[in-house]
Length: 172
Image (cartoon, rainbow, N blue to C red):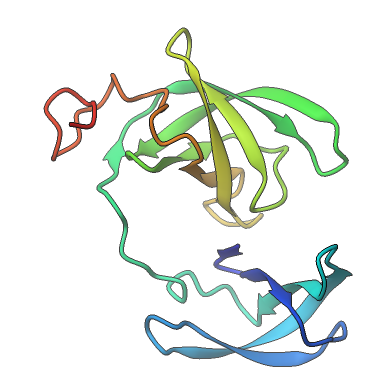
């Protein structure tokens, strides 16, 4: 899991808080220094480690998008568990959507990329999504999240937007 501030990774090699490491984007071969800001043992072995850039670097993780995004504002309902494991349900709005996910605004409860959430739009059904990134507090992306589908055939907005390679909004 990653965002402009760093990444959450699993490492087999032990590290300590404050250690400085180098991380390489395997697609661009760009290399940057990161600092270990979180470390916890992983149940299956190794450690789950939070790595932070010295300053946010939004372009470090650049990657070719699978599909086009369509600017679209739709009211949705988001359900999941907060960082303490307590269930929450809240209203949110899409900023843009694609066949593989969306960017939502107004999601204050989510604090960890990788969380599984449920998104529902009125009577159009519900679908499960994984949180890909969370906007950094103090930036224009604060309270925004990027989500990718965990149910490819169930998109709550499939009937709302016609994507370039489809005719009806449904996959052919």
